Length: 232
Image (cartoon, rainbow, N blue to C red; front, side):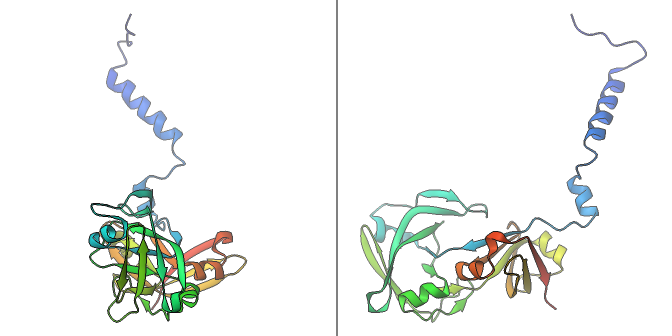
């Protein structure tokens, strides 16, 4: 039998009371609107970007076989990007090599290898510090996969430390695409990394990328606090 409401209490009254109870029980959880009104900082993620490479569609087929495409293994923090199951061997001068370097997807217009400073020492390559995609005039290497090998005439870099963010995040920090910021890391090895390149667009999440050498130097795994600061 359906529940009957008292004549003095309409269904609209019941719905209003329920809403008031729900809101009262959640008073301690700030909504997105209240976060914005309080000017709270957006969530910051600091990631260590280990050695990896990006490949063109053509190079994927040459290294892994005709018709092959990258196989996503794990999603990265930024939407649409992933670590692939595929790895390659990187060979530098004097036949020095790194045997299993992860490929990241999706594919790109130009192949590129991103290494840390100590990786460059191991390979015998003097790595230039460049923003991702700025590979003109950089050293090359040989990439070896299960189906073949390719020689890159350029594209081996030490990626410039940088911070991805949305336009809304950029407004919060008072910066724009191409500006520079500092990253403060507090902990057992407190460190300040200056001159992070701001890479702002419509969709990126707030994330700093530093390489393995930088992450180890700051003992990032045991950091107690991280903060982004605008550089004047």
